[in-house]
Amino acid sequence: MDSQYKFRGRIEMYEVSLLLWHEYKILLLIIKVQLYMGKTCQLKSILRSVDTVSGFFGVVSKEDCVTDVYFGTDYHSHLGTSTGGMAIWNGNSFNRSIHNIENTQFRAKFESELPKIKGNMGIGCISDTEPQPLTVRSRLGQYAISTVGRINNLYEIAEKELDRNIHFMETSKGTINPTEFVSVIIDQEDSFKDGLLKAQELIEGSCSILLLTPQGIYASRDKLGRTPLIAGEKEGSYCVSFESSTFTNLGYTFNYELGPGEIIFLTPDGIEKIAPPGDKMKICAFLWVYYGYPSSTYEGMNVEVMRYRNGAAMAKKDDVEIDMVAGIPDSGVGHAIGYSNQSKVPFGRPFVKYTPTWARSFMPQDQHIRNLVARMKLMPIPELVSEKRLLFCDDSIVRGTQMRETVDLLYKCNAREVHIRPACPPLVFGCKYLNFSTSRSEMDLIARQAIIELEGEEPECYDGYCDPDNDQYDCMVNSIKKLLNFSTLKYQNIHDMLDAIGIDKDRICTYCWNGKG
Image 1 (cartoon, helix red, strand yellow):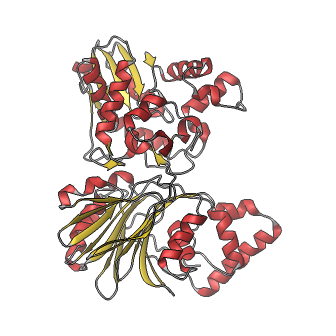
Image 2 (cartoon, helix red, strand yellow):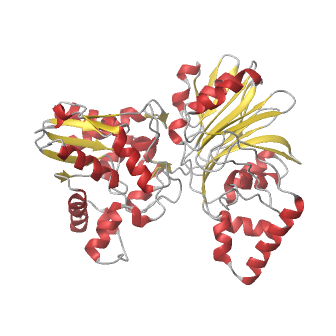
Image 3 (tube, one colour):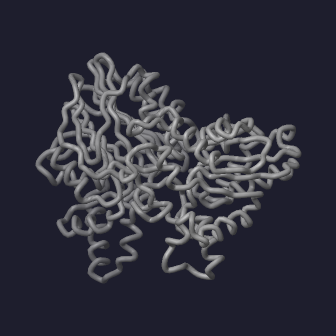
């Protein structure tokens, strides 16, 4: 049976093609038999939700926009390292190109193709799940589509659709392509607007969508605004982006930030509001703490500014005696600068990150490879480490494996003390709305491991471990400190972290820390 993806190991191009109809009928029959026999566990392995860290960018222009789409998409490379793609409307058809970027940067893969691509409207995506954008021809017309998010109830929705004789393509991993799944929902309605609203209504988790038609781009922010979607403008052009950091170098200025569940339609002549924003927002706090780009701004708060504020707040409540403040590259640096500025302790770089030939370490699925990459690209400066009392700020501690190895490396360079200050509270719960790490189980989290070590089993309630004023919390932190061999460990308080973000606390998701999303 031919694969829907012609993927030859680490080849450059993914070619998405339709399965033969009789193959679909066989797949549909197998799934229906499984449903009838109640083998839902097997079916769920096919239809399971897909975690994703992705970003996208779109442009509509009165002139050629390919270069803007190219660079705008590339500016989202910090959000993924698996595949990159662009779809450009040339006036008659879509020109789509998708590449594997696991070992080569997005720019290098697409640069040679740019002279061959022309068009005044386009979208691009960096994805760590399925190749995107997809191109679709349906009763609503031709379009290209890209999504960012996580669909928790994909299985439940798909089961209902299968009963209506709707079929889905499987990815090479045996899962339904989430973006194609969204397009099927959209195509069941009478218009793109109704389809996008239906998708937001049905999807549990989050799903922001860019949908490129021959007339313009529909931009739909996820129902609770967990991820950002921001429009920019310059003379003759409009863009829409996950990251506002894309704007300045491409000549765009801020135009409008979509609210939760809001839909707009961009054309070369302007922006039309299609559906109003909802009242409730739960934007992800990790945008500021960890994975947002420093020059981006969400809901009026710049990422780097928040990190300075956050680090300063940590320093105000700390009295440890140290010789130097440092940041774990890259997202820990801003927090460390804020800490240093407030504490008046010098900021330094006792080790540097060697980046020219090493990919991002949090993306590989294999934990051993991820740890190896993280260890190899951090290069200590012994002259700044030896006999020093060092304090490091990091964005968070997830599993703790890489942090333990980093600390051990510093001790081998004769560090006198190593104090760790994570910029957020302990991660007690795995995110069920987005995905900022590759943890497959909450048991991967170092906080959960410490709790089980203390309790002997999983507790029925975690509330005490989420409350910094509770003795259980102190015991957990002390256990993590011993497990990871830190001199001291002090996490940021959730209240101070939210104050550093500076927007209404009720509009921020804190599920990872207290189970409240």
